[in-house]
Length: 207
Image (cartoon, rainbow, N blue to C red; front, top):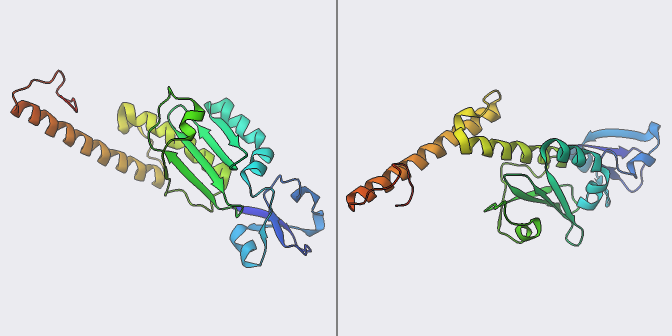
């Protein structure tokens, strides 16, 4: 993730693009670099734009665009500085400890009939394939793509795109999950038959 900083700053602070404090840096003193490089040089995150409150403020246009294009809903809880993201197929939460290391968590059991507030109190698991150093915009785009792929899988995983290496890897995981699912269904079917029961559908999971 790239950040902006002042080469003459005594406080040695770096900012996200669009931060009101970043806009105060004089043009001749502005320098953009990778966040890791800035940290290595002794710079620290801005106490404003490194929070979810700050991100919510400076990235409102981006989030409105995502809402318009994909129907994504964003809810910021200021008391915990946590951003909740809801799509039509999943529910997520993202926060940072003020270090621009963004933690992404996925709700274990998504239920579209539940309200956003109800799902906020559900159980989550960390999304380990998302690096904490990733930019929050890219994390939100990841969420949208993830849940769009989830909807495709529910119909037929074979419709998943396979253009990039990442997409091919995701396709292979989906194929393996489908294979395990079918194996479980077959075992349940044979178990039903062994008990002399006749399931209504040969692919039912429970009879």
